[in-house]
Length: 325
Length: 270
Image (tube, rainbow over all chains, first blue to last red; front, side, top):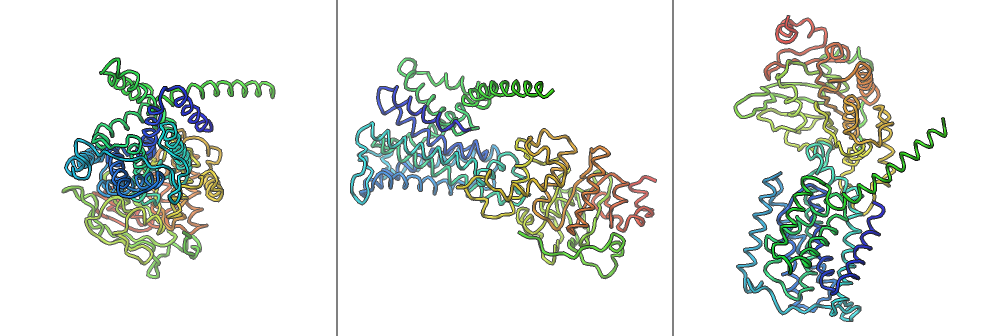
C-alpha cells in the first residue's frame, strides 16, 4: 500500500499530540514494534506463536542486566535486546522445526511457560516476582558522549517512535523482498514450496530470527521505558496481548499490528478506570474480527476505500468504452 | 542452475529402438512404499531413458501416484534405490532434488491460488537461485530477469494474457498448464506429470500433447507421465509401465502393451 507509511506517521502523530502524557504513546509504540514482529511469523509466514513473551521478556531482562553491568548507550542496549530475542527465537525454531498446525501452537505455548518459570526460578538475576528494579535509562551516546538525552518522557517517546518507524519500514521492505515472497509462499502452500526447491526449514528459521529480533528490540525498549522489568513482561498475558492486538488490527498489512496495538492500549487506558472488565470488549472485537471482518480493522477501512476507488475506475472505464463506441 | 548439455534425441522412431545401448536418466530398483501394513507399491523396477516419454498405466488404486511420490521424494521409501544421472538420490530431500533437475506437476492442481499467475512462476524460478532467496533488502518487483523469464514461460504455456490474475481464478485447463509452467521453471532434466490432461477440454489436450512433445524434442527433457487418456498415451509414449495393486505387471512399447494379454485382462478389461 502506497499510503501505509503516511498513515503510520499520521497515526503516530495523532497519538503523540492527543494524549495527555507521553507514556501512553510510548507504550503503544513499543507494543506496535513487538506486534509487527509477531506478524512476521503469523501474518506473513503463517506460524501462530504464543511464545513471543519469551523473546520480549527475555530481551527486557537481558537489557536490564546488561545496562546495570556495563555503561552502554541506548542504541547498544536496544540492539542487545534484539540479539537476545533473535537467539531465543532461533532456539524456539530449532525445537519446533518439525511441528505443524496445532502442535506448533501448543509447543510455543509450552516453551513460553518454560521461559516464565525460568524467570521465576532464577530470582538472583530476575528478581523473581518482585521484578528487576533499579535500572537506569541510558541516553543515546557515541563513545561516551551524549548525543541525545532520553531522560524526559517526551524524548524517550521520540526514540521509540524512531525505532517503530524503522521497524515498520523494514517490514514493508521485507514483504516486497525475495525473502518475504518465500515466507508468504510458505504460508500459502508449504508442500508446494518445498517441491519447488526451497529448503523450507531455513526459511522458517529466518522468519523466527526476524520476529525474535523485532520483539526483542521492543522488550529492551520496554525495560528502558519502565526502568524496571516486572515478571509479567515474560508471562503468557504478554504473548496473548500481542496475538490479540495483531489480529484485531489485521494480519494482512504492516499497519494492522500498529493500529491493533494502539486500539488495545487506548482501550486499556480509557476503559480500565471505568470498567475493570474492559477486556470483554476486546474479546467481543476479537470474535467479530475472526467471524465477520477477517482482515481486521485496517482491512475493513481499506476495503471501503478500494471499493469506492474500484467503482470510480469501473465508471471511468465504462465511460471510456462508450466514447470508443 | 543450468541444466547439463544433453544430446538431442534423433527422432521418436530411433528412441523406440532402446535396446541394449540404453542411456537411462533414472533407474529405480525394488521401489516399495508402505502405508502402515498396506503395500501401496511393492518391489517395482523402472528405468526411464534419457529424452523418452515413459507412461505409467494402471487402474485406480494401482499405486501410480504413490510411485510418483516415491520417485520424486514426497513419500519415504520402505525399500529400493533410485539412481538419477549416475547418482544415488533416494535419501536426497525433495527440495534438493529440484536443484538436481527434478520437477513434477500434481494430479490436483497445487498452486498458490491467492497469488497472481506471474508470481507463481516467479517463485518457482526464484527457487533455483539458492541463497539469493534470503535477500530481504531488494524488491521482487525489480527482478527484471526473473520476471522476464516468467513471462516467457507463461507464453510457452499460453497463459501470457492471465499473468496478473490470481491462480485460483484460472479455468481448470489453465491451472493444469500453470502446473506445467511451474515444473518447467527449474529447467528440469526429468519431468513427472501426474495426469496433465485430467479434466481438460479437447483443445487443451491437443495443446498439452504438443507442449510435451516440444519439451522432449527441443530441450531433451525426459518425461514420466501418469495419464488416463489412452489414445494420447499410446500416441506419445516411448515406453509404458503397467501397475496393478502396487506391482509391475508389464512393461514395453505401446504396441507390446496393447497386445499384452495380462494387461488386457487387468486393465483394459478384455
